[in-house]
Length: 199
Image (cartoon, rainbow, N blue to C red; front, side, top):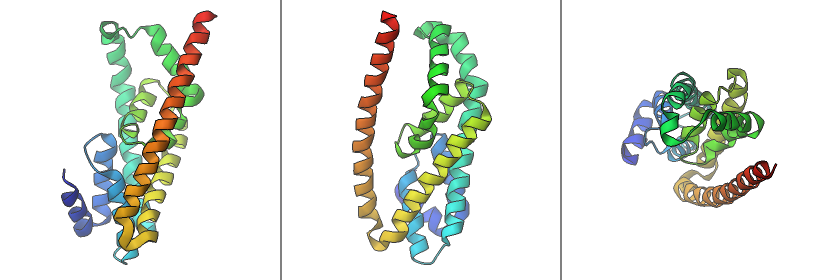
């Protein structure tokens, strides 16, 4: 779906378009989510929407999308891994390790993974596959939905006519932070598994 189409739908259909487009985007369709939210903030700045209505639509849309992904992972993910995992060298022991890691610190990826394109599309699937209880999933996922929606709607609202250039700047810094976080995470995992192997 092209950027022009997304922005046109939001301009014409308002809150409903934000809600349904974010559901599709979080589930995994190629929707420019951050641009959508920042443009929404710009429309609030122009007086075409209210801040509360835009934030509600953003939170509900992204919250519904990530919940669908969670239940897909819970219903289908684990069954598929147990059935076909041996073909890709995914053993029950490795699945148990992922479960333990997710219950220990992986839950935070539900909150901050929203800010990393590509990551937010998979965190809920992994949480469902790891059988993270829904109550814990809800706390981390829905707080992330609120923080993410608030950040980008505010960006469009406060910077007004410069919303597009500020979005580019924000995405640049988010990419840099994501790369640094990814390097740290890879280093941590290597250290953790090497320590376990020595033990």
